[in-house]
Length: 172
Image (tube, rainbow, N blue to C red; front, side, top):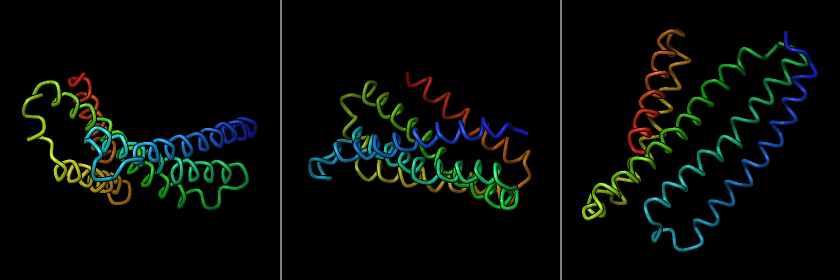
């Protein structure tokens, strides 16, 4: 029972944010990769990972959200199916973004605490492994929307978000 004017206003704002999100993150990725890909430092590699997840938000999650809003405005026919797709994709991509921010926080903590051993602790294979695991874990957690009850899903997601927030807070 949302007024149509609010839905239209929300869509206009989201279109502006979508354009900004896409252009800004493409710019970050291009600027980060000006040099050879193999010469990227680990913090810069993690920043590229964050820009990639945020770019996925702009390319996938925000258009799905706009579709849901416009369907709600015009009809309610496909909202249920689109809603499930939106929930799964948005939790997966936004979760990957949150996990990447947490990884960046922990990386900086390791650099400060173990500055002499940092190069031995944080290696290219480990960073690639963490970034890959990030996407798989978030895909798995997001799939809870499809095969578990809402209570289980909420507990799992609340635990994951709280863990990320606690780790990031501790790192800072």
